[in-house]
Amino acid sequence: MNQRLIAHATLALLLILVALPMLFILLQALFPHFSAGDFRAPFSAIPQLLAEPQLPAMFGGTLHIALGVALCSAIIGLPLGVVRGLFDLPSPKLWDLLFLIPFLTPPYIAALSWMLVLQTQGYLMQLTGLDLNNLLFSKSGIILVMTLNIFPVVYFAVSRSLLASGQRLALVARIHGATPWRAFYHITLPLLAPALAAGMLLAFTLAVEEFGVPAALGSRSGVIMLTVGIEQKLADWPIDLPGASLLSLVLVAIALCGWGLQRKLTGDSDVTSVTGKPAENIGAKLGLATLPIVLVMAFIAFLAVVLPGLSMTLTAFSATLSGGLSLDNLTVKHFAALFAQRGDALPALGTSLSLAFGTALITGAVGLCAAWLVVMQKIKGRRVIDALSLMPAALPGVVVGVGLILLWNRSFWPVSPYNTWAMLLIAYCCLLLPWPVRYISSAMRQLGANLEPAARVHGASALQALRLIVLPLIFPALLAAMLMVFAIASRELVTSLLLAPAGTQTVAVFIWRQFEQGSVGQGMAMATLTLITGLTLMLVALGIMQRGTKR
Image 1 (tube, rainbow, N blue to C red):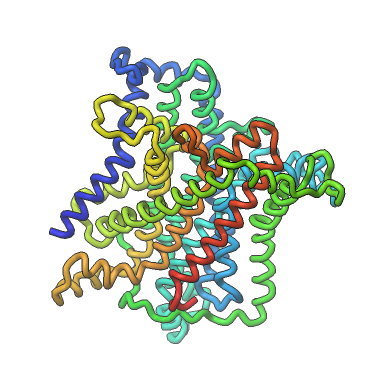
Image 2 (tube, rainbow, N blue to C red):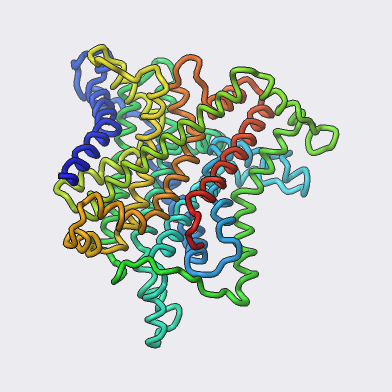
C-alpha cells in the first residue's frame, strides 16, 4: 500500500511538472494556432521549419558542441573524481567546494568573464601581451568555456560513487595478485560505470540546452545552436511559437538518443557490491604522487574557478572597463549601489535563495522516490518514470517557460500559479529534476537488490526499508545532487525572465537587466555577492548535514 501510494504520488508530480508542459509544447508544435485555442492547419509548421537554411547548422552545431563538452568533461572529471574517491587527498572537502563554484556562476556570467580575460585588450593581454581572442570566439572556445562550467557533474558522480562503494573488492583483488591497474579496470571501473555514464549524459544534455554561452560567444564565431534559434523565434517579431516548439522537440529527441546510448553502454544488468555495507572508506596513500596530483587539480581549479572569478571581481571593483588594470580605476561604488537600491538587489538575492532552497527540497524528495521506484522496486511502468525524469534536461529554460505559460494561463483552471512566485518554483523543479534522479539512481544501483528484501522479510515496511536501509546508504549522492540543484536554481535566468510576476526579481534577472542597461560593473558586483552568499550557505549546509560522517 505504501509503495502504491508513493508510486501514484510520484507519477502525479511528474505529470504536473513534466508531462503536461511538454504536452502543451507538442500541441503548439503540431497546431500552429493552438495558443489561440484553434486546432486548424495541423502540421503546417513542419515544412516551414525543414525549409529553413539555418536548420542543418543549428543541428550540427548543437551535436558537435554537446558531444565535445561531454567528452571533455569526462576527460577532466573522471581522473579528478577517481583521485577524490579512492585516495587520501589533502583537504578533500575543499576540492568539493571549489568544484561546486562553477554551478554558482551563471553561464552567461562565465562567458562574459572569459571575454573580459581573453579578448583583444582584455586582462590577459594587458598583463602578458597574449591575445587569445580567436581561440575564445570559436567552436573550440565555446566547448572549453562550457566544459569548465559543466565538468563537475562528472567529478561528483564519479567521486560519490567511489565513496559509496569503497574499494574493498579492489583490495581483495590486489590480495589475490592483481596489479593496481588490473584491479581498477576489472573491479573499480565497472562499479563506477553507471555513475560515469550518468554524469556524461547530464553533461551532454546540459550542453544541449545551454543558451548563455553560445549566445555570448557564438555570434562572433559563426556558431549557432538550437537554443539560440529557439530564442530568436521567441524574441524576434513575429513570434514563432510553433517553430520554437518544433525545435524543442528536436532537443528532446537528441536527449532521448543520449539516454538510449547510456542504457546500451551500461546494459540492463548492474554491477554491485556483494554486501552493500557502507564500510569506512579509507583512501589509499598517494605518496610521491601527492604534489603532482595536487598541482594538476589546482591548475584545473584555477582555470574553472579562480580565473573567471578574478575577472568577475576585478570588473566589480573597476570604475570603468576602459580604465583597465590600475589602482586609479578601483572603486567600491558598484557594491554601494547594490545596498542603496532599496527594494531591488537584496530582495532579489533573498528571492533566489528561497526558491533555490525550495527547489532542492522538492526535487530531492521526488528524485528519491522516482529512483527508488525505478531501481529498487522495479515497478511496472518504471521506464515511463525514468524517461519523464530525464526529458526536462533536454528542454531549454525558455521553452519550459513557454510550456508553463501555455499550460497555466488558461481560464478553465479553478486555481492557477500563473503570475505568482509558484510558477518560478514549478519551472525550476521541472528543469532540475534530472539531477537528483540520476545521481540517486547511480548510487542505488551499487547497493544491489538484496538489502531491502531482507529488511522486508524481517518485518520492515517499504517506507521503513527506504528510510532505515536505503536512504542512509545513498545519502552522499542525494546531498551532492541537492547542493547542485540549489546552486543552479539560484542563478536560473531564462525562466525567471519569462515567468517572474510583476514586482518580483531574482538575482539572474537583476544582473541581466544591469547588463542591458550597460552597468556591467554593478552586474558583476551582484554576481560576486551572490557567489559569496551561496558559498557561505553551502559551507554551513555541509557542516551541518555531514556532521559525524567520514571524509
